[in-house]
Length: 357
Ligand SMILES: *Cc1c(COP(=O)(O)O)cnc(C)c1O
Image (cartoon, rainbow, N blue to C red):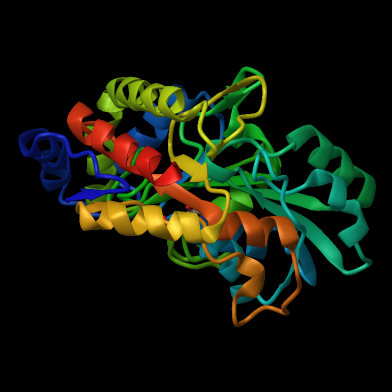
């Protein structure tokens, strides 16, 4: 069976050797030595100044909305994982969807200003598949209208844009370290922010504690635990090798499909991408469904990322967004992970190509 991704696992002994440090201290959580070590190693590896490790990639989104004091309407993308929209609704705000760019698949920055009202407090956009949003344009719009900017950067581990970490853009960026993501801690995630927001974000992720006997703000429990951090520390040394393998697979896919009728993801210029997903866009949905069915009959399981378009969720005010709805119905992510065998890769390519004829 071949799935869209396969969790990279280090040797069990390597994980256990790191976990031993937690046994030695007797601490399983509450920001023990392993969480602190992981944060400092990620700070160095990602070259980003302010990081808070968290227990998944959704709580940082909710904390960003809460701790920035966002209210009313938040302008967002309909083409993302459900957590982007559900976090807005969960925090009592209203998502206002703006359609996406058909090539980059990120929020269409030229349509943002028309969606701003006196109730708008922020823009929450996703760097889809690690492809950066038009961050400069979004920053200028936010400045002009006094809005906060939050990026769901769940897919952006290791991505740099114009020479710096993509996590450095926006007031807050969030990442997921879920087992299906490029870099993982089983479940896990992180929040990155501008220095002026660090203290409030930190406080919010730990019940609002200000020392053991005082509280400085409302808070929740989003702390990463020691076993999670141990997994991250065991996986991190392999990232260079993982990225190299993924790049090779992406290049083979690209070569196979460049002259086909499939539309491929266009990466924004000056991006050092992370090969996190391999989406292909079919001419129509029936073609996608046919390819998916044939792949599944060969025990190959691609995923419809992202489907459905989030403006069609049952708990949001419905609106019509032609680009996002069209792309969502036609996009399929093909298997991509370190360790994908060449013969399996060739089988996937051959099946897809046969169905396109
Ligand atoms: C995975 C993902 C999340 C949620 O992360 P979890 O760690 O699973 O909570 C949020 N947004 C996007 C775009 C994602 O892909």
